[in-house]
Image (cartoon, rainbow, N blue to C red):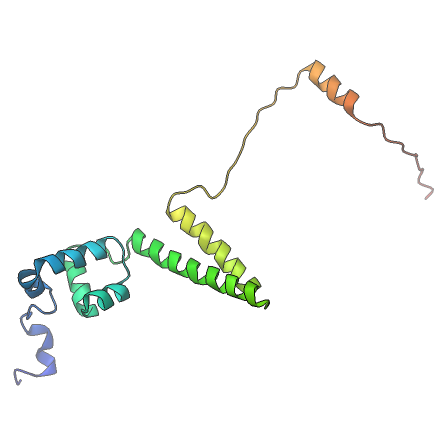
Length: 157
């Protein structure tokens, strides 16, 4: 097969462009910043735009540096972005007086709840009270109750 054949593609030695090693040697500060952004969960689309790199390079860096591309922080960032979009749509529709905001309210509530769960903030507050009723306290509650006037009706069937 010719050396540039597509069949030989996986057998070619890596050029360094797709592994990030040339970038690491040439510009270690940029490479470290890219790794830091990926480990903090910055979305890959944002990293490609900011660092002017390819998606292939980012995937290779994630693989080499053992950065989980589906980390909790990445999911939190995406949920926060979706939450902001829903909130913007709700605010815009409320300002314009349209009814489309009602459709954004439910996803906004769901996203807010899920985001709070992932950030380990309480989503529910449960209060438990133990009340020990004594005979005197029970009689006091009965005495506070208002009498009810009722009429007894007999069944004539």
